[in-house]
Image (cartoon, rainbow, N blue to C red; front, top):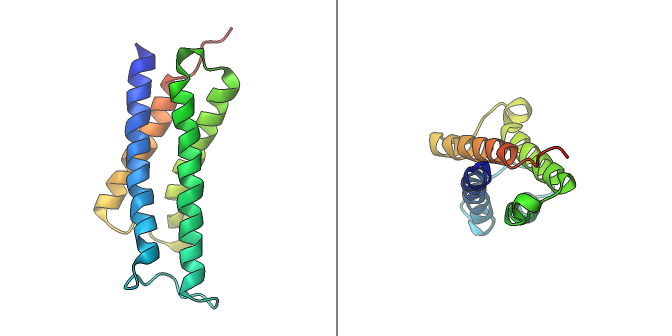
Length: 131
């Protein structure tokens, strides 16, 4: 039972995380988007946005593989899933101490909260039994 519930909650967290990635990646081609002013120019900021989107998609894909492995997943796979879930969640909330701002708006804040809760709770429920 916790396998199905954990998988569903994790899927919700991943879906919310991918909404955030999609939004970030959307800024790459948006010429009206004004990001941080950096000496290297707007292209440098866009490069980092693309890199973030690709790294995040790859990391969350690893969690998908772990969910798909089902109850036979080993502890090493679960540790990878947990590390990615916690790391991704920490990255979403790291903007406040670094830049002084949370998510850019209330909708984004809700997406970040759902993604964090889904990944952390869902992956926790998927942990394998101690053998």
